[in-house]
Image (cartoon, rainbow over the protein chains, first blue to last red):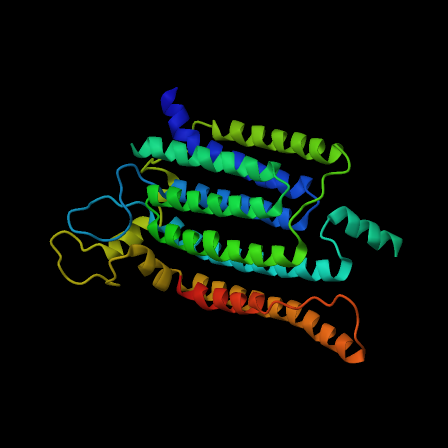
Amino acid sequence: MTDLIIGLYNYWIVIILMMVGFYIVMSRQNLVKSLIGLNIFQTSVFILYITLGKVTGGTAPILEKGIKLYSNPLPHVLILTAIVVGVSTTALGLALVVRIKEAYGTIEENEINRMDNES
Amino acid sequence: MEGILNIILLGGMAVTAIAIAKMRNLFVVTMLSGIYSLLSAGIFVLLDAVDVAFTEAAVGAGITTVLFLSTLILVGREAKPRQFRMQAILPFLLVLAVGAGLIFASLDPNMPRFGDPNSPANQRLAPEFLADSVPQVGNEAPTRVGIPNIVTTTLASYRGYDTLGEVVVIFTAGIAVLILLGAARRRREDEELEGPETGAKPEPPKEDSRMADASKEAPGS
């Protein structure tokens, strides 16, 4: 039982983080808050990948004499790319939020919708 | 010891995420998301992904927080409360159902346990990459790539096209941000030329330069 919990704990936390991010994106009307929810979702996926690459007893994949077991470097490479892409999409999203604020005077989704419907 | 630290840090991340969901003050939310990124960088160190930890701490906790803060200057700090309770309940039920389904799926006996060296993810490709980097026993000849950091080796050689694509994405995003924010400034200048109007906010020039910083730094990471 303990083995099961320790063996799956990382996945469960990843699922919780993912769902919290998903909830923030869906439930909040504020656009900045939604972007933060997206970031949380994104980070949870990163943790899932890195968890899959971990090998018990392994070390960081940097060559050193006398070390035989390394963790899997491939997920690290993929996530390295994903983090940087994530920050550029966040920057784009924030620029859109700034423009929406200038055009509508608010960043609450329901108020924007109401303005669109009225006009 | 590592296992305990792993449990504590991941628990801290879950608590921080839930606190983010509860808060309405956007400044607090931004700071909490910085803490969240830093905690995840700690997790990455524990899970042997040191390069990812560097990047997450610099980009996730650093640049992203700065971007959010400079946006908050322009859009205000407070999120408005919900109008209807349904807006909270309906997504909550959906999220609960999806989360329960995913946890049920994770109980599958074939799901690789934490740290399993025989999991499918560790069977293909990675052993070959490692073999190309690690000198073989009895063969002291230089390895094919010759860089001690295997992540760098893989990033620069085997997955070079990924990095090229990443640079394209950053370039596109940088251009898009410059167009979006630059167009706004041009329009404001036009209005100022037509006549003095009320309440023109000064455009903070920092947003652009920070984007440029982000674009410059990213390809090297």
